[in-house]
Length: 302
Image (cartoon, rainbow, N blue to C red):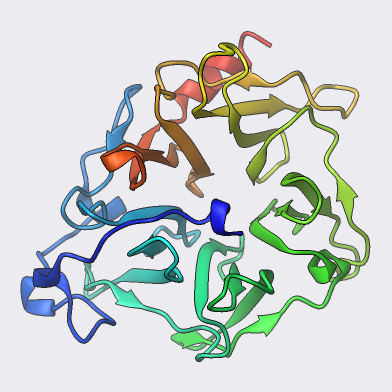
């Protein structure tokens, strides 16, 4: 578990208030999709530098609501310190200051990797103890303008140490199984339940993102093309006509670098790929985004 969580330093104090939210007076006026940030092209760019991507801490696990008016992401301030989820939403036609959620209300020390469901009425996330044990998948249900108290997923999924949940449009759940070789597993949603777990039939990869229609699966893994490299790259599998997964395709140097790339997600409108890259001091993860045209260009070659 400790190897799966990433380190950072402290928050930018000028943007903090009581450790739980950013000071409203210090938060800029932001309007429009994606915090009003200029969309990237085929070259990855740091997302919201100085606002979300802050020097000295890690950010990863970005998720948006279906209407793109809520955003949730993970921050971690120091290696060995539990991570937290922050959020912002559009109110009165502008984005609110970031606030820390506390879904488990103190029952768990760490909360990370939020994943908003396709209908926007549930958020799945990973929660764990202060000593990084009992790492399980939890969820909250939308209640009015807020969320219910967190509920641990009642499923064989949680029989192991697990993290990084991602859902397709029909509710099938893909996740990383820490207990069984840091591998990608999945559970089909049948009658609203996840009663059986299966190992994904792919060559390698973890921290998976499944597309809404399950036509592709993005993972990260140690670079396989150059044996001298030790960094992790993003790879993609495409669903073939016979229902099996293709061979993994490296997303290429347009996306990957000589640093680690990890925790890929795609926005609900299908336009942008978000991921984190470990660059600062060799430990810090910065949040990047890039046009999903990089995916379509690879698909055309399969």
